[in-house]
Length: 347
Ligand SMILES: Cc1ncc(C[n+]2csc(CCOP(=O)(O)OP(=O)(O)O)c2C)c(N)n1
Ligand SMILES: [Mg+2]
Image 1 (cartoon, helix red, strand yellow):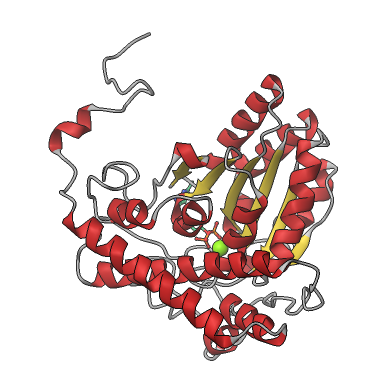
Image 2: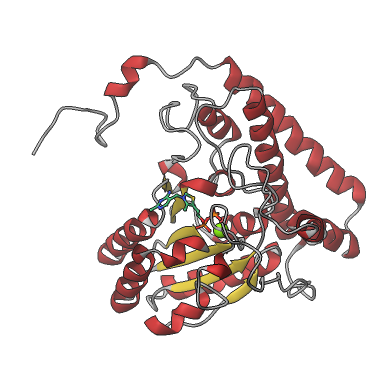
């Protein structure tokens, strides 16, 4: 653990302030998506404290602008391959239900994986949430395979792989970007730079300031670093990268500067953070930025309160439904190993 020796990268706040070019419905959808992720993650934490969550859980509190911008920029049949450590927000933003997510965390039959996968293995194929991986970097290589498949089939589907700043120092990141750039695969590498790995400040183990974007030029790609706390900026940047991939012009690496407002996982209190850092970051977190923007643009506070109440009602409904669902059945361990539902070994 070595956290305080190197300069930290601050989020370039406000880069999207002039963004008044979206219809208000788009902005409200981005707000709702962020609120859903925030409330659902907070509920996941409450359920963990009640000992109802099975296994470990990592929360994306503070990173909701990334999932909202991404989710809205993709079509339903576009693919996402997620970092299992922080995947709940993306699964929700891509259309998976809260019951499916919370049920999965609690090991219930109503969960996205029938309660067999847990927090780090969310997938919802009907929504293009193909899989989430606990092994750092695995999702990047597999996303290349999916992108190659849509390139081969000519479907114009785009694939996105999400990952953290720490993951850029894994070989799989470099191998994947190299292959994608060489074959012009329709894939987007979306780095959520929350400045920490597990308990280590990434800048203390990385020779460049922007661990994803500063490596892009080595693969002939553009250097893209954005304010990942601003949903408008993420949405706009994603739209461009998606259009590029659909047009057959190859991959992009997008580095979103953000911050996790909790510890790495479960009960990590984050004592390795310098004093005062969290308080400073709370002032520029996604919901603070976006709520203020909507009010500045003339959206009535009652409209925002309604969105917040609707989202909370959905969290309550999903929690009840998930708790009422039975735990994963033991026999289910012998189902769904293959895509046809079977388990029998075959060559
Ligand atoms: C290959 C591999 N090495 C180590 C780990 C243990 N581990 C889990 S999360 C994590 C840190 C990931 O940091 P980052 O990529 O920045 O994502 P973040 O958790 O910050 O969102 C580590 C080292 C792992 N899961 N897989
Ligand atoms: Mg990180």
